[in-house]
Length: 125
Image (cartoon, rainbow, N blue to C red; front, side, top):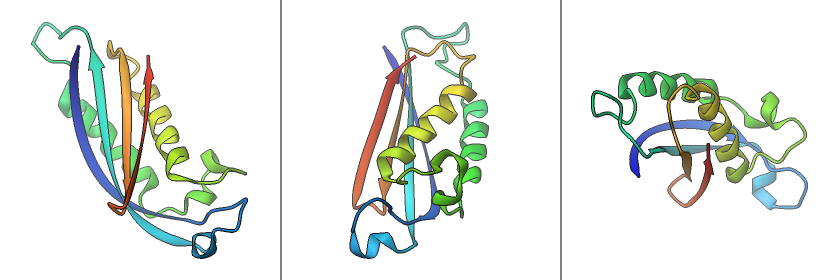
């Protein structure tokens, strides 16, 4: 199995809902570092897993969509707690849709929140 990983950083705001988490219930910002890992069993005719330039364009578009936003106000989080785990899942769904034309076996999004905590969401495609 081949794997290819790429990273981007962005900042976004959120506040947690549904429980008493002290300061986390008040809107605040985080610096997120996201790693996208793509997996496939075979390479294309050029010896590539994917076109890195194209994947970079998708990374830029997705991070631009979230950068500077208050996650609670985004449609993907309507009525949901915008936890780091949920954010990784939402990002995973965005990349799954955008990269559907590649012959991928799995896609993983790993997300660090201020370099203090991280989560990872992986699914076979």
